Amino acid sequence: MMIIRQFEPYDFEDVLNIEMEAFTEHNPFVYMNFYEMNKEGFFVVSMNNRIVGFVMGYRSAVNEGRIFSLAVKKEYQGMGIGSQLMQTILNVFQQQGLRSATLEVRASNHIAKTLYQDLGFIACWVEQRYYSDGENGIIMKKQLSPLCWVNSIQASL
Ligand SMILES: CC(C)(COP(=O)(O)OP(=O)(O)OC[C@H]1O[C@@H](n2cnc3c(N)ncnc32)[C@H](O)[C@@H]1OP(=O)(O)O)[C@@H](O)C(=O)NCCC(=O)NCCS
Image 1 (cartoon, helix red, strand yellow):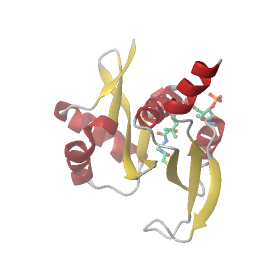
Image 2 (cartoon, protein in one colour; image 1 turned 90 degrees about the vertical axis):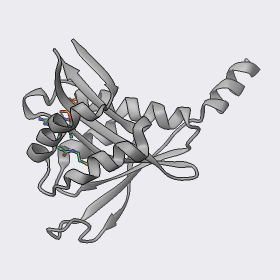
Image 3 (cartoon, helix red, strand yellow; image 1 turned 135 degrees about the vertical axis):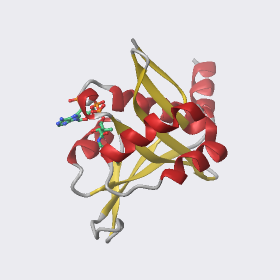
């Protein structure tokens, strides 16, 4: 059974293992700091009591949320888990009344770019040599529909 829930400190080691497998740049300190600063934007997914993915997002500007990191364990990829984690953090942003979500992705990461495009993200610009190995970063954004609009539309129907 798949459960998406907020990160707890005892998930730390599992999250780090996924991070080590998924990314070439590592910074273990980021995770506990992120938890201390942005609990409400840090989610893990468990399958049969095993942590198999995580997403981290935070309010980066008055009206904007930023997805800081997303990863799914290799053997669980392609099952829709990444999309559901993204949906979870986008719902949080929406509940916070944010108007847009933003993220950066390696130019070569076609799987992630496709996932983000499918969720409505649009590539906006390129940050040259954004990553420490010199690769360019693509900045992508998605417009969110604030709940107040939805409510006011429903009220006027
Ligand atoms: C990016 C990542 C989180 C996606 O997670 P996931 O659970 O595999 O994603 P999903 O199963 O929800 O797939 C969503 C979409 O991604 C694309 N996708 C996923 N796996 C794919 C694969 N092996 N080949 C091609 N496209 C793929 C598809 O477009 C898919 O949509 P579809 O189901 O309609 O075909 C995962 O590949 C990962 O952890 N990668 C390493 C870390 C990383 O790159 N993180 C993003 C940094 S910006």
